[in-house]
Image 1 (cartoon, rainbow, N blue to C red):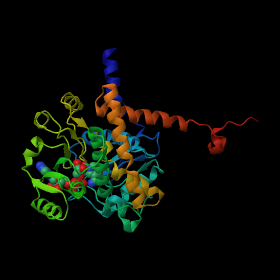
Image 2: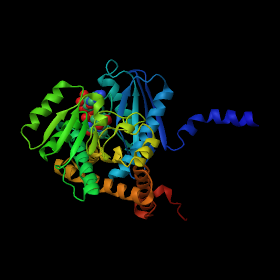
Image 3: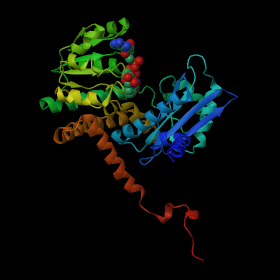
Image 4: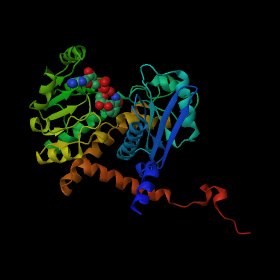
Length: 381
Ligand code: NAD
């Protein structure tokens, strides 16, 4: 009996693995070498939205695990950003440096198109806007395109604006006003997002500590600082974690809140753009125990997503930047809920998203004869 049950489990392993997901599509096109997986996690809020990653995964299992995890994350990110999209993601198995071709992305576009608008996609790690200029020849369900193609262009602009709004909300909670200027920040990474955040803080008159592996970025931020009322000081790569500052602003890579860094932090809060900052959920609890506020990354870094979602209304830069102000309110809401409930901020954020999806789901159960397809209504003869 047990053996029978175990073999059933094995036979249905794939469905068990995707038990939280609506649909998983395996795409195979031998003529171009395309091997991709599209995962649609939840479309309660609207069509699934999520970028397409290209990576030389070592196995199908590894690619599947990644796409399932990332698409679920997109459901929460869309709910937190209050955009009418659900969660999805795609992965292309291959080396982005050597295995790309225009035909491969056109083939991928055809698979996306075959989903009839259930899934919208664009760039992610390993893919560029140029790749999607090929894909868009086969499908309209692509966003995050260059401005010349009707898209919003560089998404790091709204992402940085969102981070600054998250920092303002944090200052509001900590100091009773949201001014950026009178505080000290430690910024890790002066890339597309971090550099713009650093400029915003310098222009507000703040003192910033910065670190990056790029000498050019460090020199450039020094040149900006002399034209502002702010001040900048560079620190060594590993010293950024122990810098005495008000807020640590991680804008380089994930997993930086962990057992090694938590004991080093001398800040009141952590607010930055990096994805997956908590190495593990328990690190959120360790931060809470240490009295450090943590602004959940997927709420703070949603500016790029807000821009991509906005493209469906016809791109408008001012409207997108105005919408990133939503991040200010969302971060404060999470802090307040976590304070009153005793949850970690990550737990509060997740609960807030789940509640939003459940409430919005009710709207979709509103019955209207006019929008039901005729064939779904059994007619009385
Ligand atoms: P980026 O690659 O332009 O910038 C990363 C920067 O970190 C680079 O300047 C790099 O030199 C620096 N860096 C690398 N290793 C470092 C180290 N050990 N110490 C200090 N600095 C180091 O990337 P980005 O687009 O600015 O994104 C930054 C983070 O924000 C990433 O985690 C990304 O996933 C996330 N994010 C970005 C966007 C966006 O719109 N670009 C949106 C959401 C989330």
